[in-house]
Length: 256
Image 1 (tube, helix red, strand yellow):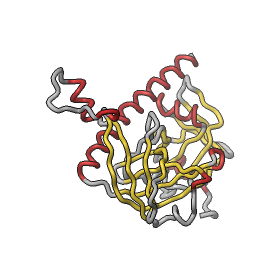
Image 2 (cartoon, helix red, strand yellow):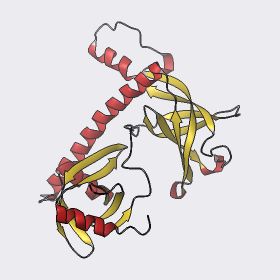
Image 3 (cartoon, one colour):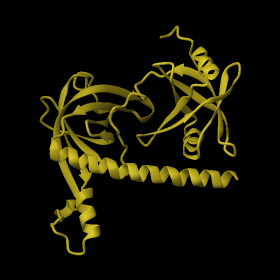
């Protein structure tokens, strides 16, 4: 892969006019826009965007390119952005080193901190860890560097995880019914629900600046737990899209 001429791939795409897709990840949610290369220079390309994608480009200063003629995902940096014309100039291209373009499941980042209690195989005491993101088939969580063990958290190791999520189904019943059909009071944990599942670690990546590790796990959520997670993901998608819309509207208002 090191010998692949990334810029040549983009040059062929511009010549054919077959189009590319801009891809950013905003709070775990993929934000994409299909466009074409409007011009190409010595080491940069110019593309058009829409308002929400342009907001991602502005705040993240990078985007990923899915080129129709290529199976590879290309990472690029935003070197200039014309918000008025919704155009961006991209450069510093390289092959993406992760599977950002191959996500089979929607995953979202929590708005407020959500905690998971993680029990690695053989552990008696659980580790309380903040969730990084969650999908219907897995979750990522953070472990402080001083708690991390390469032997315990190596890919392939099994674990059990208990996750506490907002009970959005119960909250919806409570909002929409003056006399709820079910009692959703749960003492100090009103409006929350805990689910427990087994899984397997698939990745362990250091985040040096934060002095922690990000652990990815594939989880086997059962039917009821899966329903709760899907409801949470659906609600977070609505919130994330709304937040991005507000962010982009504010950005374009300030730039006028």
